Amino acid sequence: MIDLDKLYQPNPGLASRSISFENPTGAPGAGGKVESPLGIGRKGDPARMVESGETVLLADISGPGTIRHIWMTTLARPVTLRGALIRIYWEGESFPTVELPLGDFFGFAHGSTPSFQSALHAVGPRYGMNSFVPMPFQRQARIELVNESLRPMTLFYQVDYTIGDEHGAILPKLHGWFNRQNPTVAGQDFVLLHERVGTGRFLGSVIGIQPLGSAWWGEGEVKFYMDDDGEFATIVGTGSEDYVGLSWGIQQAPFLYLGANRVDNEEGTESGPVSMYRWHVQDPIFWQEKIRVTMQQIGHQGSSPTLDDYKRNLFEREDDWSSATFWYAEQLAPLPRCLTFEERVANLPKVKEIVGSE
Image (cartoon, rainbow, N blue to C red; front, side, top):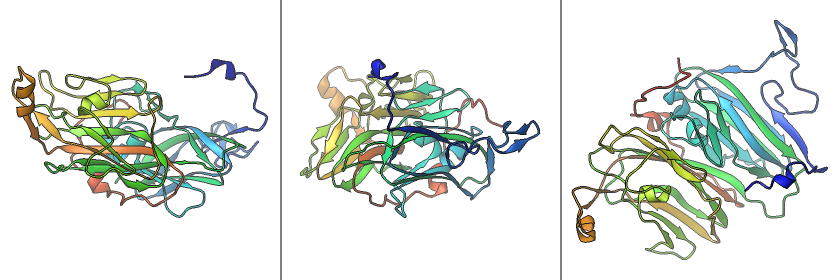
C-alpha cells in the first residue's frame, strides 16, 4: 500500500534523475541540447531508429541508486516485442542478470496485449509500456536493448531513477529470465525458474499459454522446490488459473497482483492464447539456500459430476508455454542460455487487433 503521508516528505540524501535520448547520461543540466527545426532544445532527439541486429545502450548509471520506472514504446509488432531483448547488467558484471523479450519485460506474453494495469506494469492501448519494478544497485546499472528482429524499430524510452540511496550491506538485485517450450513434453513439468543457489526472493512470473489441443488445459499445479526439498515441493498450487487468482477456467481479468491480461478464447471454447501473471508482493516467497519453480501441463476433459470423475478425466498435455520470471538475489550468476530469436518468435499467435502498428 502507498503511504500517502510520505508523498510530501523531502529526502535530502536522494537526487532524482532521468535518462532518455534527450539526456543519455542523466547528468544535471544536460538534457534537451539537440537542435530541431524549432530550435535548440525543442524536441531535438526524442527517439531513434534501432536497426536490425543493433545493440543500443539505454543507460549506464553509477550508484548507489534505484531504478524506479522505465517507460518505452515502439511500433506494436509481435515479432518485435518478442524479438527485441532487454538486458540489464549489475555492478560491472560482464553478464546480464536480466535478459527478457521486450514485451515480456513489460508484463505480457506473445508480443501483444490489450491495455492493462497491475501493481508492477501498465500498458496503454497504443503500447506505451511501463515498468515500476524496483531495481536497486550499489555501484553500477547498465541497460541495453538488442533488436534481434529482422526490421528496424523506432524507439522512445525513459529511465527514471534516484541516486544516493542508502542500501544495506546485503542488497539483492533484480533478475529476469525467459523460457519457452513449444511444445512441452507430456509428463515433464514446464520450468518457470531453473535451480538457483543462494538466498533470494521470488517476485513472480508472466506466463503465456497457446493451447495446441482441445479441452481445458489449466489443471497443472505450480511447485516451489526450496532449500532441502527433494522429490516433493514445499509450496504446491491447485491449478494453473488458480495460481493467478482465477477459477473455473480462465477469464480476462487483470488485477493488481495477479490475473490474466489477455484471453483470446473463441466463444464456447478455452483454446485461445492466454497471457497471465502473478506478483508475490503481499505474499512474499523467500528461500535461504536454493529454489526451483515448475508448472505442470495437465488438462481435463469430459463431465465430472463427482470429484472421483474429475480426477479420472485429468490427462497430460503438450502445449506452447512461455514465461518471464523475476526474482531478487544477492549472488550474481549467469542466466541459463538465452533462447534464439527463432525460438522466441516461432508460431506466435495471431492477434485480433493491434492498435499502433504499421
